[in-house]
Amino acid sequence: MLLGAVKEQMRSILANRVFNCSVDLGCGFGDGAEVIRPHTRKLIGVDNDSFKLQVAEATKLYDSLYLSDVRVFAIPSECDSVFLFDVLEHIPTKDGEALLMKLQNFPFLLLTTPSKYFPHALDGHVTVWSESELRKLGFETSTFNLGISSILYGAEIMAVKWR
Image (tube, rainbow, N blue to C red; front, side, top):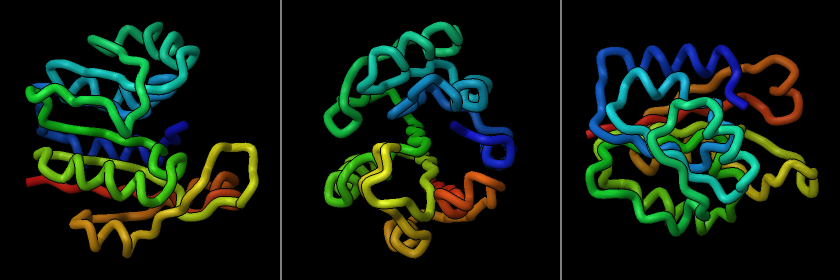
């Protein structure tokens, strides 16, 4: 779930930007759509959970939704921006690296991920990323303390890359 401080930072980053087509990879319940929608002509959501897609569909903010693993989804060539909100921590590190390499040629990429996790927790987190790892991949990063959530998951990292 994207909290207020993260959404406000996203709005700041997206100010004065308009995309032709955006993909919300791992869209979940559609928490990020309200921030992305004003900045894109077409919004596509992708998630591997059909229940979450039903909830996302109810927001009426997506033009299309796809049930798919984000690692294998074929992003349409018309898309010029990709968003991954709290996705990377749910896939193994090697898969995350491969996904980021696959996405490196998109003109705009914005992601969020927590800076720590508890092994064997029931939240589906299997890996953790650091700001330095993301900076090595060409991202600009910042972190946000999210109050009580930060106790469990550390600061939220936001990383953005554009050409």
